[in-house]
Length: 91
Image (cartoon, rainbow, N blue to C red):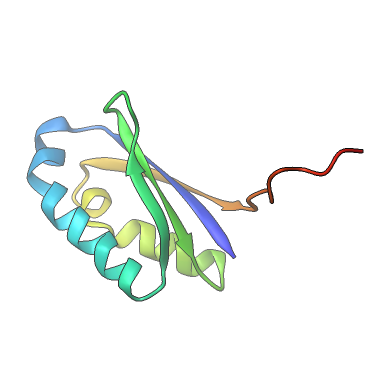
């Protein structure tokens, strides 16, 4: 199941310091098949990570272990996510 993790920057200076560790963390999880996709918001206020996990608890744990979150640079909210298969057939 996929889980959408919404990250909001709350401490810009700390975010700059932890960004390399954050990128390394999500890259390693991607290699393990635990991250489906990730990227920053266009306005620079944070970003999103889509986790591929078997449970919501696992997704929450991975999101909170992210150095950007555990350092206090960002807050996180995790939601179960069911992507649509597009195009959606006509009714």
